Length: 329
Image 1 (spheres, rainbow, N blue to C red):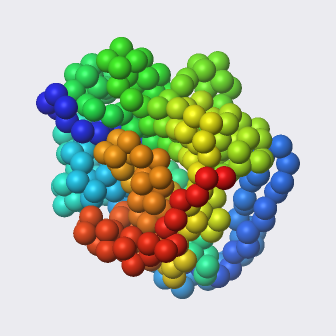
Image 2 (image 1 turned 30 degrees about the vertical axis):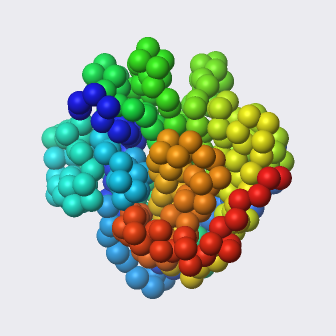
């Protein structure tokens, strides 16, 4: 990386196997925090309406979204020395994401996500992390952080990953680089006690409602936003839209109604678009509009990647300008 080289994204890369079925039910469990579970009949066969294969992973998904909006993006991730790994690297090249920092572990398999998609488009994912779990502190250099403009951290789960996460935060503080934190619920389940002891503070924290509720132990949206350790906090809440806090100001943008084909990667598209737009415009309201539109467009096609152009996103935003209205709440 050369000095001033845009975004450094740290996160997973996978190949997703999409399995569409109507033989699932969703169960919401309310307690200290909200969990949403998928139920499949035990010890029996569930019918699938279709199976597809697409590259994915939180790091790759967010990086491709940022690149679609015009930013230079370097991805620090990992794949195995197998055919799936070659698929991932080819895909990153196609979308213009710089993969020079992607580690190839020859003795490992590339991560795989088995994405179970309901007839309504909602999804649950079975994950084999594979090579992603091998990423550790030795895989990030001082220069990679020093030469970036913004560091974006997506889901990191293994013990080695957590040591990498801590080193990324340390180097970012050393070089005064803004950090965006966009974890998965799996990362939070794995490292919540350690995160609490670490007491990090981010420039932007982006989570969905389940993640935000788990992280903070709160259920009210304003309470969650107020408790997230970030200068700008963002919470996605499905069909209700998304909320953000900047200082003491709270904002809401509604979700754009679309025909949902696949929710896989929609949160990553939102996170990537919000971060890219915010650091380009310094405007929370503009970032919320852009992110809501990006997530809505992602919902209209299968696969985890945002496959539209910046012009396509702008056209969608123009058509839905009356819906993409950010209000103080």
